[in-house]
Length: 437
Ligand SMILES: NC(=O)c1ccc[n+]([C@@H]2O[C@H](COP(=O)([O-])OP(=O)(O)OC[C@H]3O[C@@H](n4cnc5c(N)ncnc54)[C@H](O)[C@@H]3O)[C@@H](O)[C@H]2O)c1
Image (cartoon, rainbow, N blue to C red; front, side, top):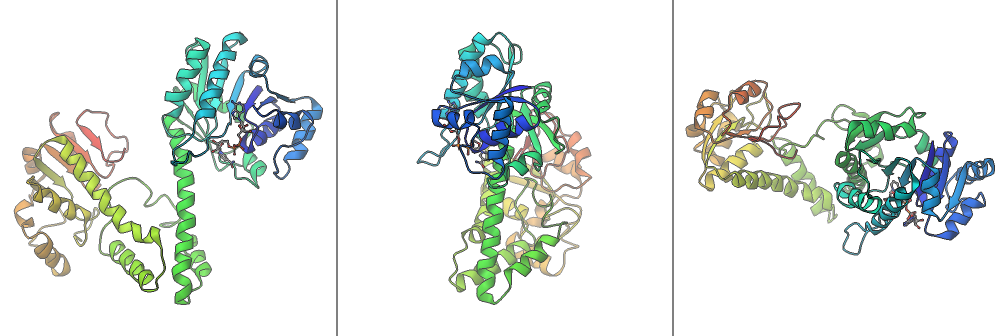
């Protein structure tokens, strides 16, 4: 294929050289003539292991070109990769002016080029930016329609500076988003020779994946550092701790606990987060991430309350009360907290949880209910039919396998508010509301 690469920074230079290496012919474009000159001379404008050799090789071979002319690049190629910078503004917001400008320039050149072009955005941009900022500019400047006269895709870049070339050939994954599956497939063809797992997605999903990835990497680093910061004054070897931690691929380094759902609770997580935070405070160690966890969790419950308020109904049926399915443990169940808040706001609540019945509760659970939610007995129903007969809003609070058939029986005017993503494919019905999806 013949490919234009817009922006000869870290991503653009590595992409340009590596796509040549995959057998494509590449035109590298930058507004900075100095960078273009480097490419023309067969030199790398940036420091990155192995890049200089690749640029020299393909510049000599005549398959890597440098130009400042957008028209020349578009006329010679079928695919354009947008790799321009998206730096932070002073406010922290994303500066997308370079992407906006390059979209206008590519659009104007497409108008003249006489063949159908594929534009693939690789710059990191917040979800919605391709649709709202790039698409209309390409269409306005070209006078063409996406999906008919040209195609647009979003393909996040996962390379790490310092190991960028290796990462290009062995990425953790390739993600390509398109407005249609065929467009994403077509765009993914540029990676045909790579073996990384390929994920075709919607444009916004592909945009968001990049943020989920990078923010998670930041979370991991801060987490490891905060564990180390608390471990050291306690005389604990944090590297040994994290070695053992990382060896747990069931609960720790795994998809477990990473699916958006309701707040955490139960008899362990809140207690243990509080205990470690409290010890850090005693030691006068500032661990903002650790300190923020309980607050973030409370905020998540408040988010659910706000959504329930937005439905404008007062009769609530709660399916599930314990902090997870298959247990009667109500200690620090965030559902109990939710019920308490809603009762305080005058909601009429009925609850069904087959594992929870006051008669059966003993010990710590019974005491918890008696002190935290004394009127629980009046709210508990023995059958789901009572919930269906009472509720204007049915809240699904744990993923009990018995609940989907109950929800199938809900009337169209009964709102289903799902806190736990109970359906593998959430129904596209007007009365269904997923909490964070
Ligand atoms: N650097 C990384 O490791 C990395 C990794 C993954 C994703 N990203 C993302 O990729 C994008 C590019 O990052 P980078 O580090 O390569 O940026 P960079 O700042 O190093 O390079 C951007 C280049 O774009 C050029 N440019 C600006 N406007 C242009 C235009 N209209 N036409 C042609 N060229 C233009 C600039 O002159 C510059 O050379 C960013 O969105 C970044 O967040 C970067």
